[in-house]
Length: 298
Image (cartoon, rainbow, N blue to C red; front, side, top):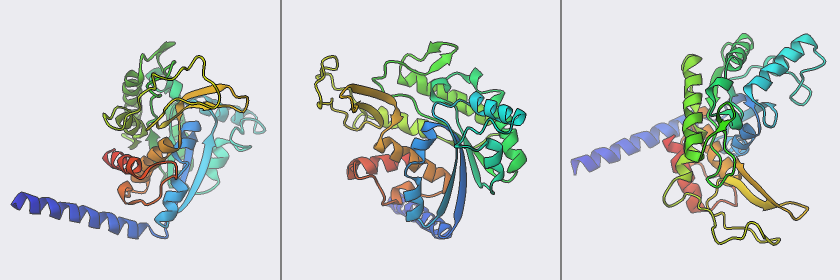
């Protein structure tokens, strides 16, 4: 009985602290510059709605290119340094321009998912980018965004050593996780946004984990039929405008964007994701509840 009372008191204390933090955030402005690619676009998709709910004025800056690696980000800096009319890769702006455009509270950086499991692809580019950020924004907190492994039914996985690829989503998650943590440690123990851990936990959960529809005829699929993709957090199968079956096991779907957003909210806003009311309409209440609990654990 004493243990039960003590546990309840601890829960009440934690909830009270979270409410106090939410109250402190109200009216606050948070400026976040993302040095990333489509995966940072996925992760930030629902951040504005979450920020609005807790009355935080969120300013998002985007140094993003689809499929962009750390090396490519740094190459754009070098090109721009040689010729200022070039290297403006981010909708006509260079990384230096974005960094100097205003004060940023937080800057995030990440590797291209295809290369995320190969530690040798991170440096010296990450360190160069880190030093550049600090030269313009010495007070900004830099976060490493740990991206996610592809869906369990993917055909090709991320590279882990040269052209060698991971054999499944577990190995891709393990290798990329190790590489991201090594990166964070090498740059002075930077904080990590563990989207990749949250994705893997959902993907491998006994109840909620995605399971491939083995009854569907993928070779002879007939429009508009699709396989069951219940609880998928990746885009998966869809029909194109040309009525050809497309497959994207890499990017996040609405549920995956929501999950990544919850993890970002937890780490950047220091808020409790389980207290958020917002969710995409396509995500069921029960699944949303599980995603919130997963984000809280990461």
